[in-house]
Length: 198
Image (cartoon, rainbow, N blue to C red; front, side, top):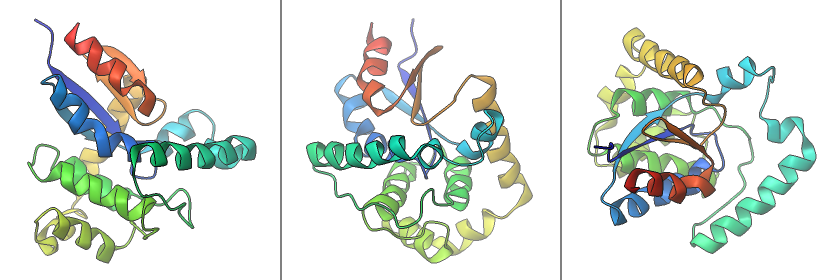
């Protein structure tokens, strides 16, 4: 029997992960599909491909298109959108927390809060106070979780998750796995869900 769980691989700096994160639960629920949340870092993957920055910064025409596309996409989805004044933002702290608490019932709400802070409110998600606010939105006390995020074991867990992403052929975000079948991009979410139900 096929797995009824979709793997959602995301980076908090990724523009297209924002709409994917905000809608994946509703899309999956319609097909009774569970979600496995996987925070990772795109930076090492871009370095692996020979890039030292986001391709949207390396190729200005591609970047200009992406920002306009995000405006259209978020408008269609009725999602607030504000182009971040810094791109890409450092999502390391948030990623460590998401990796450490991947199975927590509050994790999806935290993930959405971080994306909303970055792409709807232009807040600096690399700062502890912003992440604390996101944790509070998810109903969590922030002090212990923020302190834990700097522990070597938590850092190592995120490093291993990113290495696993590279080994499995992840080259961008959002990335989905329906079983062993890979899908890349927010616009492939429904196709990935369909693959699980086939």
